[in-house]
Image (cartoon, rainbow, N blue to C red; front, side):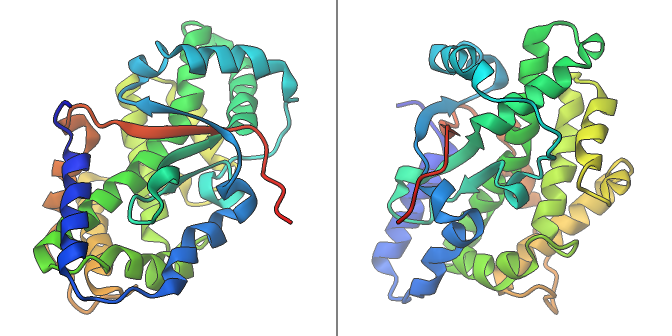
Length: 281
């Protein structure tokens, strides 16, 4: 198997758990299901592995599914706010069983976005670029959550505490979710904007997509490197101390630059596509 930093981190996390006597809180295992809802958490779909946008479009399962289901979903004006509207989400590998680990996208929301952007086809080179932009709109946001978990695992290994990330999700992320005080969500949108331009997608399209729900999106346009680094520093300190406003903000933002997927090869990130919510009795 090719080298993958994420698989190395997961193996190290498992070794740490096996040698650590720290007891886990059962309540923490319900965080993702509470935020995503059991209906979508257990929804049926298919999984592929994401390496890059080019790799994604060579995947025959992905291409065939879009072709076969494209007309099943009607276009609507609902906005897509990632986790907030259950359009896409990230399930961490910290939770067992790991069969749900990875980035998750709803096919209806992806196809709806493709159809919206298709109306603005003059902004794109071709139809394939429209599909790429629509897909990466969701993936780039969720990639940041993946990076945060990897950073958390590094901190857990250093501090020899395998519960830092789960404690952060309960005490900070869940309590600030859907508010302007959720640093991780704000940074995920900032990361989306920063990486979007790397693909040469039209900036005005992204601004339009974000403006539907993020009243703060205009500030993201002027989110400088210093501001981004300082907020990453605060986020990692929140994880380190399981506190929304840690008294000490540690200068550890450098961990994030090492974790950035652009600096790693062969990530093997599970990418899930879901058809319909599961009926939970």
